[in-house]
Length: 113
Image 1: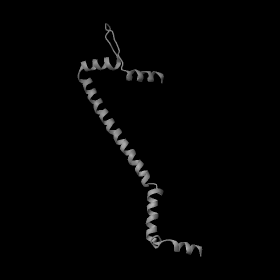
Image 2: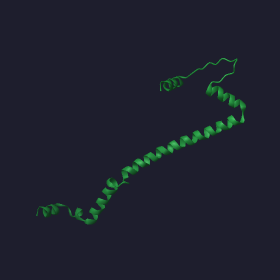
Image 3: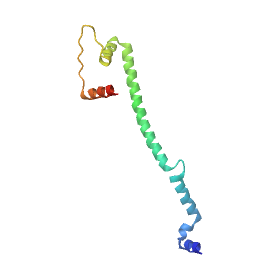
Image 4: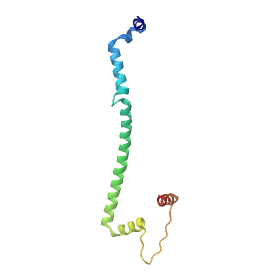
């Protein structure tokens, strides 16, 4: 009795079983399924970040390949690289190191860890 009164108050548009099936399906797809739209959105966002990282690393690899080729082909480049990166010097030379503020902070952080 109470149920029949409740059902009568529902507009006929919502009593349609096909519409109800579609509504349940949409709710299932949007919220309840393991591949729901929310998780798909998060995965697409993650994919975009991974593509940006891939692009960065591809550029770094190309740059490192170029540097390696330069080091293997020319002894002057090898000496320049050793002097700049590893602060190597000849026995009769003095070495003065001038650091930018960013380099100074980076070195301090590395020494503290």
